[in-house]
Length: 625
Image 1: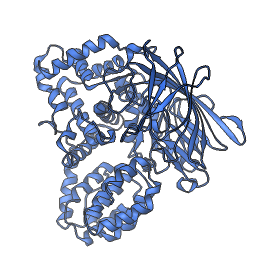
Image 2: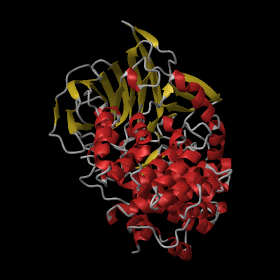
Image 3: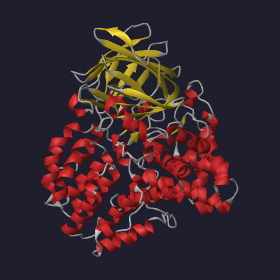
Image 4: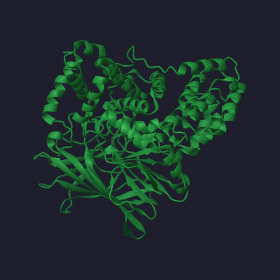
């Protein structure tokens, strides 16, 4: 049987057993995940968590969360144990719904995964209560001192659960295939404010005595645990539209609100492609600079890096990406981390469509072309197996799969499908895909089955032309998968002129977008420019002083490649004032490649490491040695 048909037969059988539909249905054992998750200890076919209720107190002095998690579960009649994922949690005791103690054990730790918490279930009942405390080194939690915040007065806390870090602050079944609703009460010292990826029930908190306030939240739609997120600090809010707003520190509120004022328009553009937005509100929390990602698509409340605040809305494509996750990733989720491309490939494609609708096809093509260049460069550094869409992550940290392959190769496949059938057919299929799998987690095989049944049908020529099996199972990028921005032709001509000796002031850059500047600097990076040329370029166009983080990053890579000492102060400033892994990793890698750069890298990293999130430092520890 061809790979496509083989996968389809298997998936149709599984779908018949589990069902799928437009609305979140009541939890039952028949809705258990269809495939094992190698990154979870859970045994959901026996007993599966369906709801988490948190009651936690944030101790900023000790850098811990402490309290209880009440877990509601479904189980088979013969099940005697509930298995949870934990990592570095101190478990005080486990109780049943009548507050009677239950036997439990923590199994030996496994690299990357942590420890299984195995609870002996009572004969009846559907709840257990776990009393626990997080570690001060909990990988998901970033505790910031006042000096590490914009306001420099109050401390700050935020979480980052993707991929498998939620288990470092919540004992639950930490698998993207085990969706759970949740509620929470989080207590913090006055005057701090708490926000979560859920409906806020107490906007101003309630008095909890002893100088504390408690904030309550609920999320009625089932989400994968990595999307449970919390932040607490000196946080202000400004509405941007009837269902949108921005949270951030007061000193950044005006600039963030101005930069993100098009959020409501973005939702409208996204709904025209993906169908109705199903999460109620869409707010953005602009975090302190240490946040390791550009954004994190936590439902109802995207967490975003302040590096997107360029002052001219030129980097809002990141918000288009996170908004798109409200459909691809949050509504329909990868069932395992080996299927990560289902989240990011669809979302990257969706992002480009939003940007096209709001800012025109030219800008969308520039973004797609830059993304394709990133993909080709990164694939050249990866082992062949990691350039496949369907990844084998056995015995590996799932973060290893978070490369541009999932994003840009995945988007290229989705674009290939769109171009093969045309938007008149593709767009209804895409909306239907989101509806058919809403509030579920699916595998690559299920995607293939849906594509075959709902779009390809009996069209053998279309099936052969798409050749989805090659895209998914084979390394590299299939021949013919091309994308190019016509606007970059002029950029490349100007790059050649400058490399050949033209003065920077003579370059025809009037009206250039930030994406064109990025492309110019990408073109110049491998060019053996002289110190005089670099000085001319920087002095003329103020690259080292730009407020656009993408342009600054591209300029610093050019400077490091040429060992240009006058750029070192800007480099140090950039590496010590933000923690976005996308920027940190390439710059440290570039520095470590030369005798000139190695001492710089070690000195800067020693100073900056404590301010980085563990997601970033875990990556960088293997680079800066």
